[in-house]
Length: 283
DNA sequence: ACCCGCACCTGTAAGC
DNA sequence: TGCTTACAGGTGCGGG
Image 1: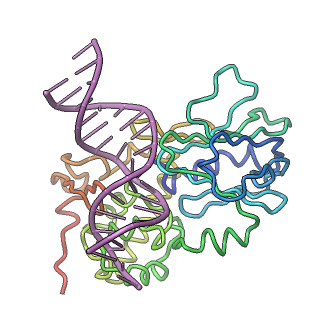
Image 2: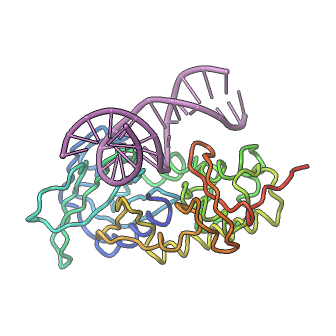
Image 3: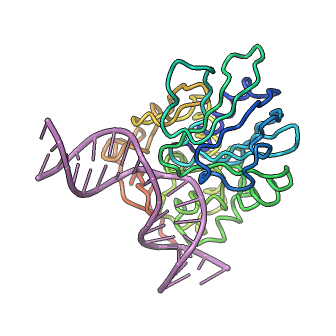
């Protein structure tokens, strides 16, 4: 599922193909996946892609005109490059597409696919709208988060730490999979109230978050057995081979061999090691 | 103000 | 074998 490492891998895989490239035409097949102005110009038709930015799980394409197209992959979203014309039929659930100007770079079409439609596109007039409106409700980006930014956000909530990590206004980029991985590596029980983490625990958690997300990006993200996640060139990730907690309920902990435990928390399947991540009694 | 719980959506897989 | 059911989860919102 696309969380920060997958979105960052998509960004990096698209960058050499898209930067400086002109969009000749934009196609919107399902207008209900779009928020904002649906005009061709807002969809970057006849624009030139100047930058690709990411905050948390959101990806922004920024045109030379200053216009911004935000892509949110949700659960099953994909941004895929393909040749055009292509001998293959258009993939199912292709909700939007962009024709790219012919230059020496071959793939000539970009598609947004999203079978479950939890994702979508947002058009914004400029970078100010992106920073001051669209991204202002998001917490610090998880890839570079430091304890001094995370500590006040955790102190403000009584929810379990796992629930707080899933809240994009607390921290941007972590979803169910990487929350379990980060808590495992930080040796913190997912049920521990967020506000009860001491300075040392918040520092450990930040280091674990940065480290696990960094390693996941180096592995190209996690492509689970459903094969849903692919980068911009259609390549699979391999970080699923390094998962320590996610999807390993009932299997031995890689550190202490105790059986990993699973229980729903914040309506999400949560896996942790009862020995390495003990519940700390709070005073 | 905070936060819980559910609806949204579809593909996959397990169960009968 | 073919149907039904459960499950996966990011986000937004109703309501407590």
